[in-house]
Image (cartoon, rainbow, N blue to C red; front, top):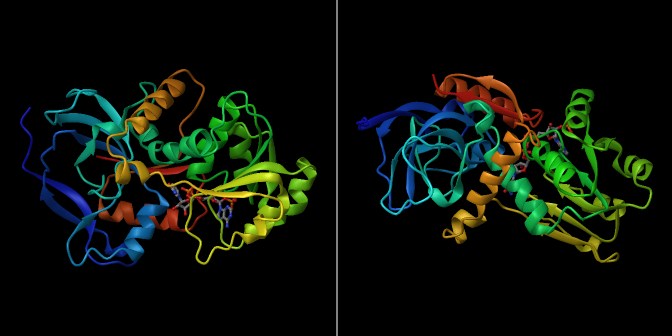
Length: 333
Ligand SMILES: NC(=O)c1ccc[n+]([C@@H]2O[C@H](COP(=O)([O-])OP(=O)(O)OC[C@H]3O[C@@H](n4cnc5c(N)ncnc54)[C@H](OP(=O)(O)O)[C@@H]3O)[C@@H](O)[C@H]2O)c1
């Protein structure tokens, strides 16, 4: 198949509201040695897209956002071993490279997975970034196993990352999963994903005491601002938090008295600092197997189309409300 030399994409060239997103035409990029050139069939939007669009200045040059994608491999670099033209893939890419809001996208084969065969493009595109984050939190930062026990409190449980983390913790560990939400529709969603208990995050100390009177061993924190003292109170001695956001001026000293820990998870650490690792490919492949076996399910809740500036602006507005449940996905026309 011969590929076009130019492609439609959505970019921004100075930071601002969703209206800075613009339809542009760019060169189709050529794969480097380890790259897959992917024809993008669907993308999902994450809070990182919103944060970059608002705060990262591309200096007047068009920057393409978008990390999650599902699509078909249309060309491969000369060193690629794990994929071939025609393969269906899903991936979250690297924050250091142009994004997926384009007809074609380059991704390093070491951070892409084979897409679940049982999902359509949109259902698959909902998963990669949040899945990598949730997986690395549970199985790398905390090194949990099927034998692990104790109680895990999942903040933001109905959000993109929480919706995968609840499922992974329920299916692949022995933990009791307590999901924190603020709305009835979020409660219904997280119960469907397998949460053992659901608590109201607006009255966290009393609510955790109700379902886990001895305290929780683990806290997953996607919304950490102002929460350190509360987490110190709801955790056991030696409990630990994994946080994934970037709260300003964080002070973790309240955790000292009970020897509690604070850890960070950043799913772009590997693409940025350990590019030869194939761990993210392996975890995406494993998650695809678990999805196809019916153990895990997609977190897609909203489908928009096509991937153009107007539709992406609408998706950004939804995601920046911090009130979406599951994931907003756009499919290419
Ligand atoms: N470090 C990493 O690698 C990494 C990866 C992915 C995401 N992140 C970051 O993690 C954060 C969450 O990402 P996400 O995709 O899961 O977000 P999301 O899908 O936008 O989260 C929305 C959900 O969060 C809940 N929520 C809203 N405000 C909250 C608060 N103050 N406390 C607790 N829950 C709240 C809402 O439900 P209720 O109101 O019903 O509770 C809503 O369902 C973002 O800051 C994102 O940039 C970091």
